[in-house]
Image (cartoon, rainbow, N blue to C red; front, side, top):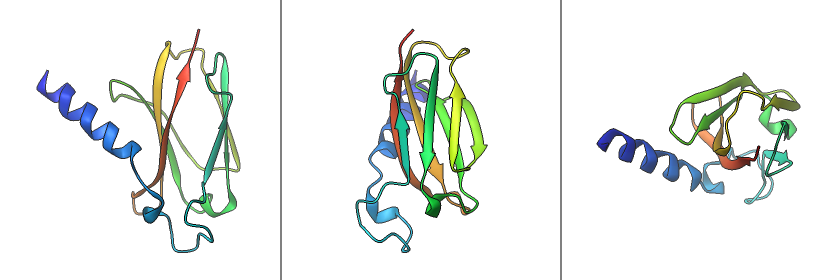
Length: 111
């Protein structure tokens, strides 16, 4: 139970990543690297990445228990088929080449 609590706290703290961790190349302090839709999603979810994010960045999706359910290198657009996803909340992370989280967020799957 303790490991679940630690994992839960870790995931919640990654959601609070602020724009201060964005690369210096960002023009605006609140610039987002990821846009995703629809939210909540039922069968597929689409992630659009801005050009600054496609230089060796990686993209990961975790279920709320902390298990990685998707990982890919960033392209301009990523569409994830949600057939094997269960109903619930999922967390995504966009990481730069050094493994630093530059953006994170959550989305919901409704089935």
